[in-house]
Length: 414
Image 1 (cartoon, one colour):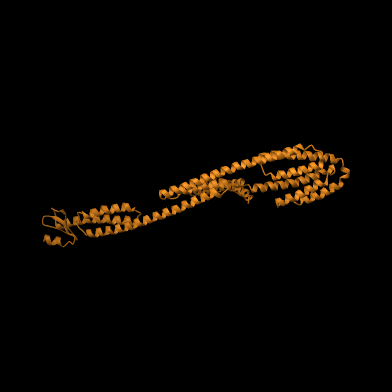
Image 2 (tube, one colour):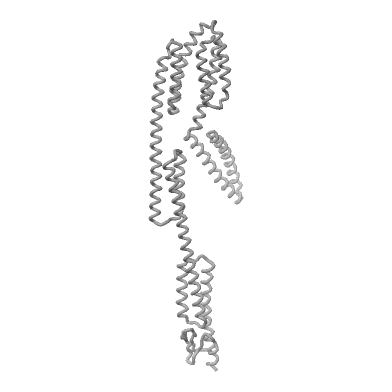
C-alpha cells in the first residue's frame, strides 16, 4: 500500500526506509529522508521546497523582465539559482526550472548586447558632440574678432564638454588637447589685438597732438585768408588721423577748437570794422545757412559731412559779415556742424564692436535673470507663498523695464 501510494507521484517517491527521491531525466536522486508520518506528508513537504524554489525563479523572472536589472547582477542571480536547482532537496519538475533559467540567461545575454550597443551609440554621440565643440572652438580661435562674445562662447563650450558623456581615453585626451590649444590661441590673439589697438590709438594721439600744436601756433596770425586755409587743412588732417582714446580725443579737440576759435574770433573782430561794406557777405551767408540747415536731420553722415564741407568752404570764401549778424549766422552754422558731428559720433558708436558686445551682454544677462525670476514666481505661486510671489513680481517688473531699455540700446547698433 505504501509503495503504490508514493509511486503515483510523477516527480518523486519515498522508499521503505524513508528515503525521499526526486525523478529527473538522468534518473532518481535522493533529496532527504522522512522517518515520521505518511509518505504523502514527506512528498508534500518536499513539494513545498520545490514551490519555494519555483517562487524564487518566478521572482527573478519578474525582476529581469520588469526592471532595468544590470546584466551582470542578473547573471549572478541566475547562476546562484541554477546551482540551487541542481542541488535542490525538493520534489518537482526541476528540469522545467532549469529550462526557465536557461530562457532567462538568453534574455540577459540579449539585454547585455543591447546595453553594449547603447553604450557604443552613446559614446559615438558623445564623440560627435565633442568633435563639434572642438571644431567650433578652433573656428572661434582662428576667425572671430568679437572678443567678448567669443570668450564667453568658449567658456560655454567647456561647460558643454563637461556635460557630455566620456569617450575612450585616447580620443578624449586628443580632443581636449585641441580644445585647450584653441582657447590658448584665442587668448593670445585677443591680447595681440588689444596691444595693437592701444598702440594704434597712441599713434593717433601723437598725430593729433602735432595738429593741435600747429593750430595753436597760428592762432594769433593776422594773415586771414592763408591761415584760414591752413586751419581747413588741419581739420582735414584731424579727421583723417582716426580716433584716439575718448579722454585724449576730448582734450585735444577742445584745444584744437579753442585755437581755431581764437583765430576766427580775432579775424571777425577786425572785419567787424568793415560792417558797412559787408552786407553782401551777410546775404551770401544767409543763403549758405539756409542751405546748411537743409542737411538736417542727418540721414547719411558722409553725404551730410561732404555737403557741409562744401558749404563751409563757400562760407569762408564769402568773407566777414556785420557784427550784429555774425553771431547768429556763425551760431546757426555751428548748430548744423554740431548735429553732423553728433551723427558722426553716433555712427562711430554704432560701429564700435566693444560697445555692441557690452549692450548684447547686458540684454543676455537681463533675459537670464528674468527666466530665473519667472521660475521662482511659478514655484512661489504653486506653494502659495504670497510674500515671495509679490517680491518676484516686483523684481520681474523692474527687470523687464530694464530689458526694454537695454534692447532699445542694442537696437541702435543695428
